[in-house]
Amino acid sequence: MTDSADVVEHRPLIIAGTGSAGLTAAIYAARSNNDPLVFEGDEPGGQLTLTSEVENFPGFPEGINGAEFINNAKEQAKRFGTDVKNGVVESIDDDVRPFRVELSNGDVYTADAVIAASGASARTLGVPGEDELMGYGLSTCATCDGAFFRGEDMLVVGGGDAAMEEASFLTKFADTVYVAHRREEFRAEDYWVDRVQEHVDAGDIEIMKNTEVTALHGSKEDGVDSVTLVSHPEGHPTDRLDDPETDEREFAVGAVFYAIGHTPNTAYLEDTGVELDDEGYIVTQGGTGGGQTATAVPGLFGAGDVVDYHYQQAVTAAGMGCKAALDADDYLETEARAGAAAADTAAAESDD
Image (cartoon, rainbow, N blue to C red; front, side):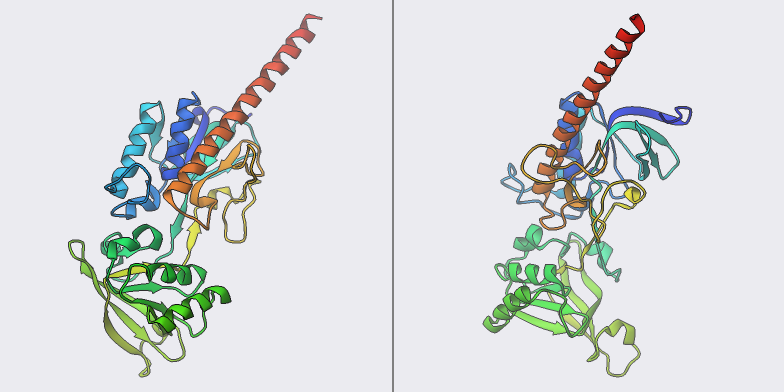
């Protein structure tokens, strides 16, 4: 048992994250009378709050603003008894039961089960115009937002599998898709490079190697209208801005898609027994039966983009959040039955 003197509160279930996965888990957990407490993290609502319109989530034929979607889900979770608090989970002690959950402000909570639904943060370039235009012509999800820019010239930034896949996908909507990659060679698998080359041959995609974006231009009202590009024949042009061979130019595009990877928000799990893959994503049991969201630590479950580095959609995250809540409910019921049986045994022995 943990020292209760410094514990703010104990809950049957704590959920880290208020994205699609965390809030769906909260709805199901609350309806199962598991009294969930949800911590919002440092990016409340996750990546959906960066999406101006969500048009591919079932039930919203006219689409819905991403932030509004999250707020609605939060209110739905609260309606069934979920408590949502501001706070960033700093660490989880899984050497004790109940779990000891410490926040970045030093507050400590305990829980019989935990769902990690803390998501993954899309990597960005940190260039001027980025913060203002995210969700207004700048996106980190082509499958989420590509259709909004039908008929526009679009720019994909990146050179890995995700960039090649997103560029290929965007040819369905774009006039021309441009791919800017800071090196000469792509990191993507040959399959995706070959797919993109087919689009290049068809005139749908143009490749700009040894090229980087240094600024985005536009407004929230009108979206992105151009970017500043720098190029150098030896690659990594931002490292060679003073080189006379570095070329800088303005380039007109109607949308920009970053495909430079995601960073899973799992630092708080690094000192636990939860297995993480090489990129830091949570490894769960998977399979087709119950317990698919279970981690290597009994009672600790993973859901959403913090697990899923492939699909990364609101609807798949919601589905996994549902699974995690059901798996946690099974775990809590099993533990409760085991505790009751142990108590009955102890009572019987004390009567002897």
